[in-house]
Image 1 (cartoon, rainbow, N blue to C red):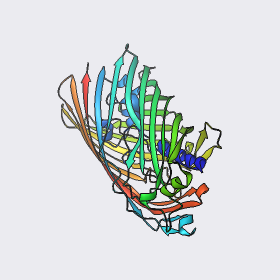
Image 2 (spheres, rainbow, N blue to C red; image 1 turned 180 degrees about the horizontal axis):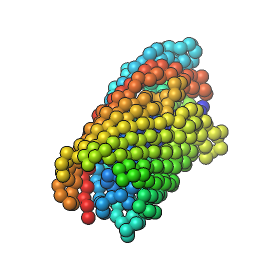
Image 3 (tube, rainbow, N blue to C red; image 1 turned 90 degrees about the vertical axis):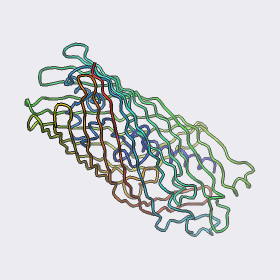
Length: 448
């Protein structure tokens, strides 16, 4: 039984962390579909990230396409923060638990909807870009491109799937760009990532007559972290004086998390075993998605610019979570069955005068989660983004970007089975998840 509990802990937990690999502090339906956090540019957010691989409006191009640095007017430092305000609703639809205490017959799971598991969460970032000479630029980005943080009420009906998730990924990205010709620029960067995860879920008490309760539940927990590395490459092409195209690829980093799994036994089980639980070490491989972005920007006039972007996510990388244990216990594999996904964004900018630029955009962001595998750790669905933004230039040195976005997250079914084999217990978690996100963002830019 200890082995099974540890494996469930790590697998459920790690699943979460990979699912979270979409960013650092974001923990909600706030990020892009899956657990990738798009919110790395305030000007980009204002147009729903349309054309971000091509536009190169400011130093945040370091993240979205380093090749764009050669289009900047000069050295720039940018500090920004995005305040993510998500809300998720998880409704129960006949979830049951089966244990020896229920006579091995399904019984309704006690508990409520878990409340809104998300708090308002800031996602900060910093970018710096400067030329070394007329054709060569260097840059640095500090971002949080993947993340997941949520915490349900103790009596959450789906607590045997998850109760708390906290995964943060910090990305340091030194970058280089080179202007090959008046039309073509290339660039790339090294992604140095620090991932840290804490994942929790409840364990049903197999001994309680009539079925488990919150008071008698146990808990399984994973604490794990890693440093790993990857790369990204991009190019921009000035097709005409008014039209710029861009392409950017980011490698899906394969994280090797080192962790400690701990189990606190349910009340009845702890009494039978004469011990409150145990702790053991393990490792897990978490494979983040490769991403490919194709962007376009076209100046209709001195005032109007139109943008578009298509982005592909290789989420099928995340097909399973495999846990290995230091004590030689068999590997534990939890199927995730993510599918490749994509996002399409359209946007526009309007130069109001010498100080103000206005922008707006729409994005459709398809979820990689699939029915039968979607979890309460990442209550995800297809997303529609509605964005507005503005930039203000105070002079040659200082600039300010502001943006607001509303994301509508489609309702999706929750249909999971969680097995606790050594205790002869299982939980059938059935319901519906939906949500929305408000985002407020601001950035300050300084031109040297």
